[in-house]
Length: 242
Ligand code: 5GP
Image 1: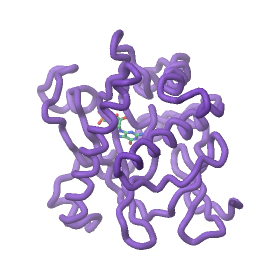
Image 2 (image 1 turned 120 degrees about the horizontal axis):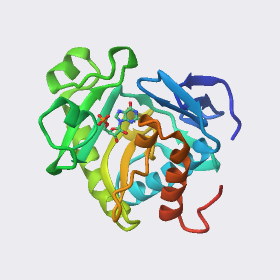
Image 3 (image 1 turned 60 degrees about the vertical axis):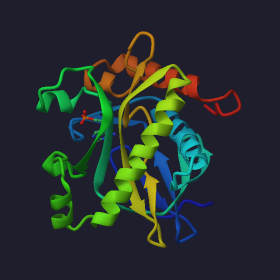
């Protein structure tokens, strides 16, 4: 599949057109950002690790009945995917209270959340991704009630599947963010990525962080080792292409 013109360049990924109207090529770059893109560093092979981890997770989700945009991993850092018109909502699921939740609400860091919290944020760096509710989403015209219900149901299903998947790898899924979009037929599919960039992952035994939170906390020299640890734990030897 040939890469055609650049359609969109995000903070860490670039999307290119292909020969087919309904497919795109997504290149995962080595950029790492924090604070709405205000801090940016380049981490060697980070794009490849995130793409391979994301491809594996999308395959697991597909096998468990979640429709995703993933088609194929063409190179370690390049994915072939269904073309989506993205819905500008970050759907966040939290199993343990931490991060912005404990900064904004009187919840103690590390509290188990049963049932999990589902939150939707507006994907808009210029507004610092403010939290949404159903009325605001509908006023903004970014999703209908029916679509909000689909996003909610899918995100909670993804949580169930991934809690178990990571548990088998000795990892606690603390929280994560997913994004959805509509394909050329109007179907809502899971898009973007699921990787240590978009999840909080803790080692089950030591509770060590294995995700981008290390970068947010300025521990830049530990980040790639954590991503590689996740890669080593969730991929089989045949799937390890880096
Ligand atoms: P928090 O709201 O506590 O900062 O983040 C909750 C979860 O969603 C974390 O797993 C975090 O990685 C993810 N998340 C929230 N906003 C973003 C974002 O803008 N980009 C990425 N990659 N992940 C996000």
